[in-house]
Each structure stands twice: as structure tokens, then as C-alpha cells.
Length: 131
Image (cartoon, rainbow, N blue to C red; front, side):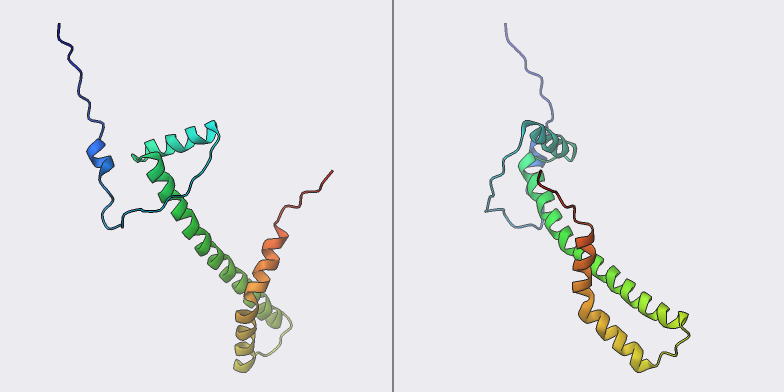
């Protein structure tokens, strides 16, 4: 009696094909996960039609890039806050703002926005106390 195996399209050919336009990955970084974390990663990778290692590499790289752009956005929001509060204060006090004064305010915002952003972010850091 001959056993006939069902052929299923597992999409292997598509999964093995490298994404067009990206160079070969030649480096690796080892990671350790709990069984629950591994299940989450595998489920996410499967849902996107990728191998777990490929999905992890792509999502890790994306996360690293996002952090940099998030920092830039937060810094610019803080800069806008600094500018608006300074200009609105002058308006509220009915002060006349000359173009030179406004240029000076802009220069101060540009030079101080990174320190101000650090201060704002530090306000949101959770402090854990030792027992």
C-alpha cells in the first residue's frame, strides 16, 4: 500500500527569498527570551509571514530608528513650547517685541532646547525606592 502525502503550499519559496533592495545580513546578535516571549515573537512573525529571526531583525532595527526620530520630535515640541510661552508672556504683559528681540528668543530656544528636553523627560522618569 502506497502512502500519498498531501502537498501544501507553505510559501517556502517566498519566505526564503530575500527582500529586494536590502544587503545580505552577515552579523548576528544573540538574544535570550522566556518561553512566553518566544511565543509572542513567533506569533508576530507568523502573522507577518516571516521567519522569527527575520522578523526580529527587522523590528529591532525599526525600533532603533524610531527612538532617534522620537527624540527629535520631542525636542522640537519642547522648543515650540519654549517659544510659545516666551512669546505669549510678552503678549500677556503687553510688551512690544522688536524683530531683534524675537531673533534673540529664537537663538535662546535653539541653544537651550536639548537641556530643556532632558529636564522635561526627567520629570517623567519613575523613581524606584529601595525598601
